Image (spheres, rainbow, N blue to C red):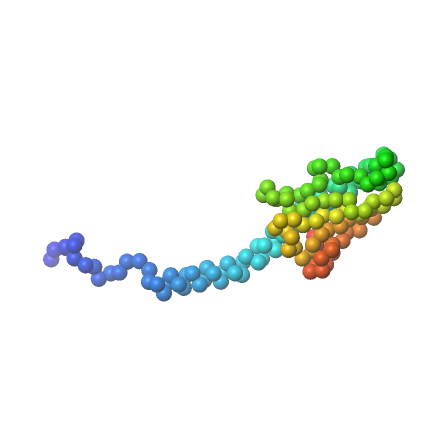
Length: 148
């Protein structure tokens, strides 16, 4: 018995169409379950970055008050946040813009507005005031969930 390399083989090599479709179905189902969970995790991490930036802005405001006795600048107008805490970035994209929403001589309210990929976040804007009261403008999650 001699082997002829040119003779057709009885063994079929490769995958059948049914096997490929089954694999694609499984991958599709796994990704459809995993993607929303991953996205929620990323949003929570980015909200945490915004909360940390709000706390830095709060420290700036409190330092200013301890030096000047007011949350206003010497001209009596609202302060401007330092450039380092005016925005929060992730992967080179701005995801939150921070501002002093309201201030007078004895109180203030800071706000972090979502930008870019965070625009659809259920918490919407995060807020922090002179009494360290945390808030949010959205209604999808509780304040505790948004500031976690």
